[in-house]
Image (cartoon, rainbow, N blue to C red; front, top):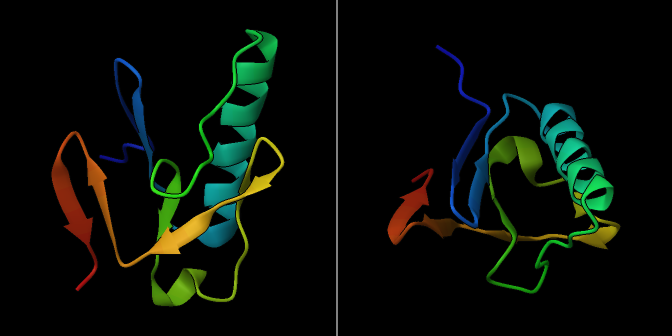
Length: 83
């Protein structure tokens, strides 16, 4: 089963198999927020990409803002890493 997004209240986790797929999900999230006159918090530590070999040479944006990369990210207090 493929689950590209997990949402809980104001926390969102997006997952994709490829860098272009992740950027496509980020673009969909951007459009969704714009349509509802909402904004995403793109500050460091709030919106990040889990760094993997496939993502190292890619730049990702959300609402026109570049996203940082991290070796570990937290979602609902649970740490995720690829190590």
